Amino acid sequence: MDTTELRTLLLRSVALAMACDGEVHEAEVAELRGLAGALPYFDGLDVEAAIARVRTEGTGEAIEAEHLAVLARTPFKERQRFAALEALLAVVAADGVLHPAERSFVRRVKGALAVGDEAFITRFPEHSTLVFGRTDEAFTPLSPFFSRPPPAEDVLP
Image 1: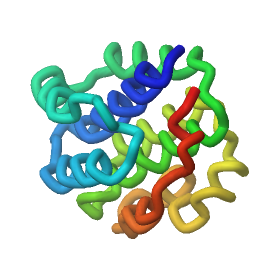
Image 2: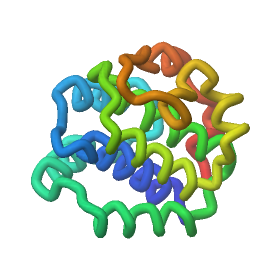
Image 3: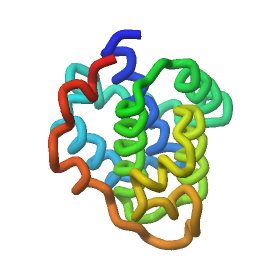
């Protein structure tokens, strides 16, 4: 799978995460746009089309299951798996509220990417409650993690 296909899967994951709670919040859209402008992961991809698609189609079990199946059979490198989760977490955290559907989606993406619990907690210790803890509390948005550009090899297959 080439780099563009991998990055397209990442974008689709983030877009589906925005809508998995039944509503696409403007803070989430703004976060995705900000990530797209700051990171090479989305270079050359039509972020606005991805946002429009998820607003039109929404999500649902069939759409999510199909996407997760594609993620599970895609040969991501470890650093790409973490980059995908980092972008996903940043967007679901953008509105400051964790919806149970967002928590569930992040857990399912984590599983599809074959990222174990210990690896997740080690990489995202302050946000591990997103996957393993309470869902009725606000949490810190992750944007500061993206203040540094990723190494070029993080976006390569």
